[in-house]
Amino acid sequence: MTTTTNTPGKARIFTRRQRKALTLTGIVAAGLAVASFGSYAVVRAVPPKFPLVYSERLQPGATEGVTVADPATALTFARVDTGHGPTVLAVTKYNGGTITGVDINAAAGTAFTEPIAAFNRLGYAAIQAIASDTSRPRVTTKASDTLTSLDTHSHHVGIGTNYIEHQAEATIEEPFVFPKIAAPTDSDEPLRAGTHGLLDYEVELGIVALNDITTQTGIPEHLGLVLSNDWTDRELLVNQIEVDNLTSGAGFTNAKSQPGFLSTGDLFVIPADWESYYKQLQLDLFVNGDLRQRAHPSNLIWDVRTMIEKVLAAGDRTWDSDGVPTHLTAQPGVIPRGTILQTGTPEGVVYRAPDTRQRFLGFMEWAGSFGTNADSIVDSALKVYVREAHEANVYLKPGDQIVTRAEGLGQIFTTIIPGERAETE
Image (tube, helix red, strand yellow):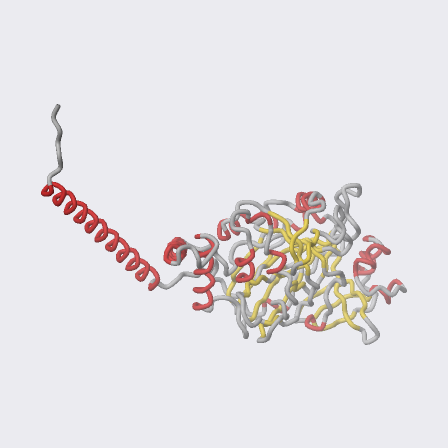
């Protein structure tokens, strides 16, 4: 039997080899770390990109008015203050910055202060006859002096990512619903920028229930239409969304329900055939004269019928609204009269999901902090996006002028002014 023993010389050689291997490993690791941090520094130095979709300019005189539908096609309303309280006009013309129409109360001997009540009492044919009677006296008022075009409650419904192009820029793959808790403001109301956050715009068609809608009532014969802007605090939103379940709608209610975050147009429209009417509309939004968004509701992923079905099916599910569990509508299983369904926005908002560069920076910052800077790599990338958006100053700020308009529907003129919106902002 032979035995082998390790000599001291062999042991020393093995130890030297181990040391050499460890040294080489350390050098490689250090080199990789230096290369990584060097790459981080290089990428960090590259300016971020915040692309805009359109370059078209708002044409001179374009905001003097919009086309008003023939009363046989759609009834158009505006609310004005007579000095003795609000009254309702059946609008026949909108040009030169003024709105002209027939005072429905003077014509019918009634005392309505908002158009839904007038329509439900008088009916389509009677109001069409009032608006079409050229012998009736006309009332003319500045468009900027009109009241909110409908007088309603503050519990409404938002539809997220309901246009394919907006899904791509937000990286959310299907539409979803969420409560929007905000009182409508009129078409000329300024909006406070807020003391922090990232203020974004969203042009949207609003569909309005004229009576309670349930599964028993089915899809109604008549629905109201209103132009709207679904303002959003993107910083608050990305801080509250569930990155693994974006279509849960988590965070959307709080980010879209601050004071002033539901601007509405100066006109309220009830078409004879709502389904064909809304599909012919084009909604435009301009920031400081530059076209940013153009919506064609005929391209909605969920059409209006589908939206109504989805809202009614939400049941007892709740969303967080400033710490309060909140149902999708004020009464589960019912779309109450006066509820606005904001149907979704097209591409062209300021927000874009973090790009490849921002995701890389987010990963490096997450790894460099050993995962302590954020809950996940995705959250870290969103933090990079928010930081760079603030540095680039690309979101809305005091002095910006936003014009939202649609032929056959109305206009909104919003000036962003300094100031805090709310204590809970």
